[in-house]
Length: 424
Image (cartoon, rainbow, N blue to C red; front, side):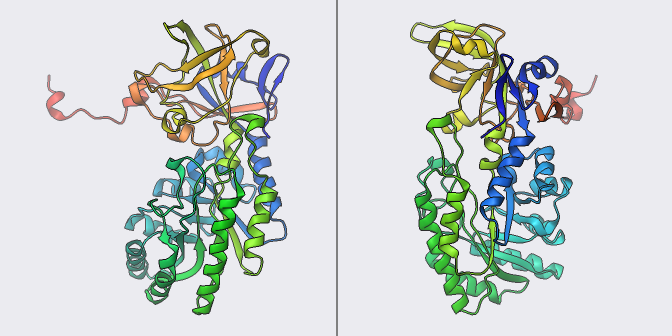
């Protein structure tokens, strides 16, 4: 569920009118609901009540400091994939022992930073990475807690660009090769293999791929213990989907997901680590845009808005579907027509929705693009020298701008002219 609803004829985020925010902040903007973020974390946490768990929110889904701080105060750890994300987690007050470091391309500097900050574990994805981590840890006199990311070659039944657990994907170590790599890890200086990691993809709405993958995790834990190795924790990754199409697109409940996890590892007696991102932040956010023009072409209608693919890339990148609601409730009872919702970016691929049945809109009307809290603002860019979209957070009757819209000069403040162009 989420906390975006019509009140007095206007779409609200909790107790705040999105139209009122648009009047002050301008459009487009992202708006996040604190109540939704908190509820999603608590529901996931409660699904594993009675188990020893560490829930590491996936920072890449939405890395705004206010979002991280909100979740951190509930006890969340963080799953990071870069030095920048590690610094963000630290800035949000997340202690190192609640941080896991993922990603296929960690640098020596990133490894050193993670070791210095005492992170909970590195999710290691290849033998070369394992050997480099050993060298870095040994040189610093540190010990790296390690989980090998095991690739189970399981089809997650999701978009091919967000599948991470098939043999042809770049992620992880083939599960048939993992046992030997664990034996190597146990011999390397500065390395303490103590966990297993698996993440098969994102926006998964079927529990069967999880069940298949987690059965392999259980088997792997048994093999490692036969070899005398420690299995202190099992990291199940994330990937649980969210409802992009409203009631027509309901993913499994966290309780059902928890049942799948616990059935697979009920006898392991170890800590359970998770890396949810989208399912916590996804429908906790919307993007609000204003209609600029309605254009009738020879074959179709275009609703042209002031938000483009640089502001919300998912429709162009993944052919992703997002529900779109008019901010004024009265528009919902008006005529409906098929239209492409497109932006001002100079690209044919610049769209938010194609061939969508929507209420007929007029210039000046506001639209809310739903389920935009994950992989929205984090993927935004400044193509066409458009400023990064601002972000707003709502809590009850109050709201705050948690990232302002840059001014024109802000956009090129970091750029420098070479000396030969500054001569008069």
